[in-house]
Length: 386
Image 1 (tube, one colour):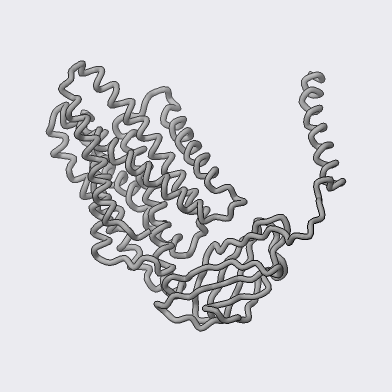
Image 2 (spheres, helix red, strand yellow; image 1 turned 60 degrees about the vertical axis):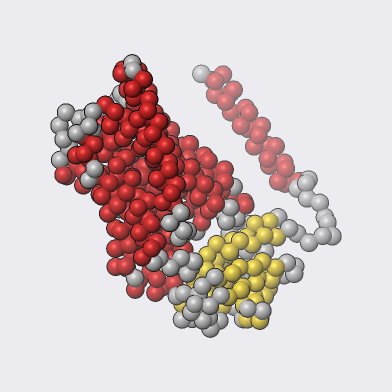
């Protein structure tokens, strides 16, 4: 036992000694006449009756001191909380008493003590507090319209699908695979897009990939905890969960775009979201077609809530200007959940094809997969809020 403890502690103590020596001696500190490398990322901007507040996050070898602030080409006074230089990966709020104009575009420029500049554009000025609080009911109805309602409409196809035979069941599973494949690629791409806006020091792109894989692995472990592959209601729940996490991330992106004025959601856009999400309802009920007993309304309502309602808190949090790294993380977790469902669905389709031992199901499988991808891709052109 003592040998095991010694063998374990020895490399840890050696590593600690090396790290202490490096920190104490500061052997890699080299004096240079060049100014230190500075980076400032504008994480979020909010506007109210008192002016503009910007949240800045610093990254670089030394703390970054904001010396001057320009708005639309003119220098303005500002206050900073906390005051002083911003240390690496820390954030500070810059308050500018600027009389912004609703609906107008404003240019911000932050000048550091070394003379480096970092800009940010407010595309359409709109009061942040007005978006979050005064439009509460509008956000709730919006979330229902683009989340739960289209999923319920898609689930209404359950009786028609259940009345079909093996070809219809195979087509429904393949359709679900197609729409989930599109959702997976779309969600992962959006997560990486959000990660590109994050301070490089957070390694947000790496975080997206790791969170996606961890989410998929964790849900796979939960689904197989009893040694059986999820089927029927269990698989339907995992599909609804994956779609729900995806819709939560979508809500974050829509809410953030709405708050900053980058998206004014009109009727046409809401119609686009509705059409885009109807197919998701079909995907939720597809695993239930072979159940000996029909699911009751309470079970179907629960699946619809899991898949559709998360878009509502997503919109509210996004409108409150949640930082991009949180949006990227939520989307990555959603992508992992969808990947887990794709793997489970693929396993079921493979077993179904082997059990049938006929080529008759090849055509429904192919056309279902293609239809799911084409429908999701086609309706995605109508969804341009993010």
